[in-house]
Length: 381
Image (tube, rainbow, N blue to C red; front, side, top):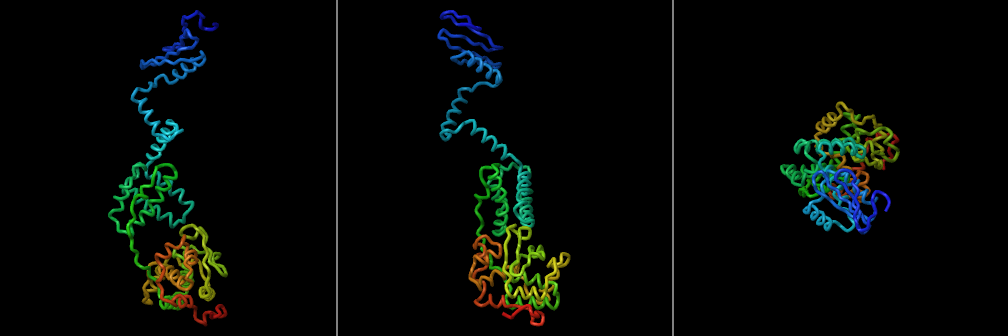
């Protein structure tokens, strides 16, 4: 044999390749490679060619300080492989687990910051502030430096335990999207809020203005603060939320519809609301000024008006009145829910069904301005 080995029948020749590395040619024409690392453990492999033996020596020298598996480690590796689905690489599985462990170690405050940054692109400013408020309270209670993966079901249970049913469910509605986002981002394996039972919240029926009180409210406004009439009329007869009313601009109000785009709505989902004949009459008789509610003292003006008239103001009463009476007239829950910006009818039926007496819807949507204020704007139908 030519090369570094001398060919002698049935006598092995050897080649030394650096410290602790030797290759022997066997009597059978194969090559036995020996490598002894600095920790003293020697390893041996047999190869059919000299080049293959050299390559193995080179690989061992690159990882010279990495000790070989002990017997116990080898048994652990075999047991782990038996647990994996067929075809799954143990190395790939371990790398993925280590990556997930590192992600779960991300601090809670950093996860909240990233979540709010992404949420800003898909929700309104009002809704974003609600998320931020509740998440910051949770962060203060749990600790901003707490690893995200350390927030467990019990952590959430302990946090909401002192709260009443309504508050508990509201908090969970704000916390759960954070952890759902973290699952989608592969930061944690599961959402701890999904395992927390919601409290049974028997909601009281929402308050609405009676048709008589709605009529008194608008007529009182025409005499005391005409500036508020469009604000009240759109709130009552289109069901637009107070915060959305404050963001309305002249281009939102068309001839037949009020168009609410993503920059105006609470949920950042656009919707349209039909302008019913009586609302059209109010808008024609009292052309809107924008903003509809003066920023400096608008809320005070509304409060002073209903107190002066002796009319109770139910929470979100204008919007609830619209939903209640529109459904009583049409019996089309899907259409009314869509005008109110609900996804589906579940929320609608929770609050508005069967709250109005028969005929109240027609009375409500027949409230129109006085004839002398109308001119030719309203036909009287």
